[in-house]
Image (cartoon, rainbow, N blue to C red):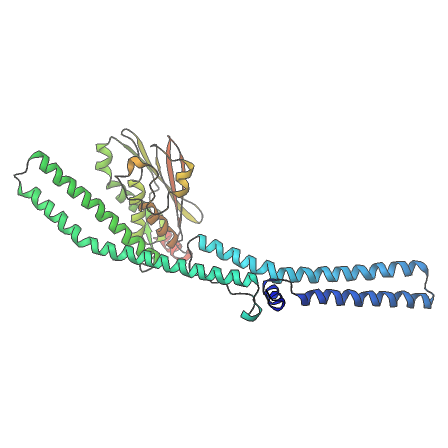
Length: 363
């Protein structure tokens, strides 16, 4: 490597360029010269010895403070602030935001290795965003393409059942076809909903509605299933409670949580609701198999199913859909679970704005 190229590379890769070294050297030489002049001047003026001792001490103390503050400013400006911006951006990317952009500190002709790191980070995020867009578009396109063939398969299976003349084994096989197409249709429907919510082509339309009445309506849908499995259902709800959210999307939340309550025969599903000062909370509790801490950590991930024994009952998208809906509704969801004892899902939804709340109270 030529000497000139070496110094060019060093300048591009150094956060503290040679010019800064010469600034420190020049300041210290100047301060030393002033110190010498100060000592000579005090001696010629015949100042007391104690003054000649303390003044240099205060002088160099001021110089040390000044250089320390200047060094601190340089470190913050050239290192801490860019790294802090990069750390915040990295956290946003980890949470799924691929629209983030971090601007380099210097122009291209003065770029150092931190600027290059930021540029590489921006390029990486751009590539991740492209992959995410490609993935969601693929899900959307494939899901739409699957809908028509599934409808044909389902309708033909239904026609075979209604036509009669099938043996018991053939009837069971046709029923299996219908069950499989129904599961696949539900998977496609959830994929489309989740894809639209993530791309925000479906925007929540918040309104004030009675969440207690909606919870009762959703619970009634599972009454036959619970009776067949001898599952006891307990509900502790207020007479009425107003929330501010999209009623249609909220219904998807309750339906998914109630269907996700894995409870053995003879078990119990408990639905609880109460109102706090700033929100309404709803819990769905079961006394089923529960989950491990690792499963709880990933339970809201797409296509994740922590318990393989229930893999035929869902598709791993229900809870991901629930979480996305609540994020867009200014709500939240949390889960507590103990392996072998059961799980509790807690949903929080905002109360109506103050004027609408007062009007609701008067009514």
